[in-house]
Length: 202
Image 1 (cartoon, helix red, strand yellow):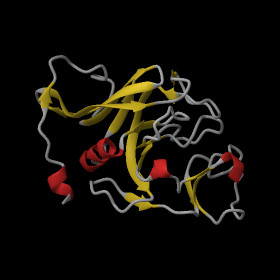
Image 2 (tube, rainbow, N blue to C red):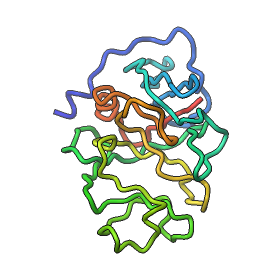
Image 3 (tube, rainbow, N blue to C red):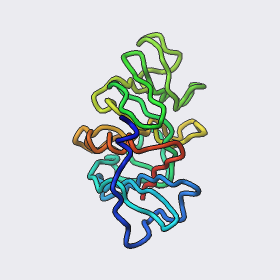
Image 4 (tube, helix red, strand yellow):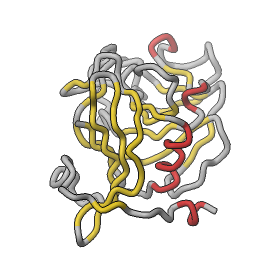
């Protein structure tokens, strides 16, 4: 089933997309072009003849403060740049696709405590028992995380350098820094993604 869902009909680009030359060896790119607190989201496949748009454009939301040059804890802005898309999680059943998927529930968190050795990573612990500050962290069992793709923002987990950046189901309003879009559009992208894909935010 997943393999069939990866078959799409490319629309050839008339000009090189804005991320061309900035994504290294990646051949799958999710481009996010910001417009204030909204964004246009497209999926692109690279080949010998250049880039083809294979899904989108979709409309979505970004941070309530728009975009920012870098991620900072507590600032609801989406960081500019190119980041890996390595895994998917969610409260729903496996969506299909080639990226690893982890189903989450009430004991799943994203550690947002900058003093914690597990800052900016997925952790599992019952509420009230976690070794990090739960008040600075996110419980992952929420409607917007029915499906979410982890964005590799602050992959080095530098304290204060931002965490919990995902591409997830839209709640219909700007985010705390994530990229969100309609469920069906997100699933189209998730089922197309393969290891090595990146997201390019401009």
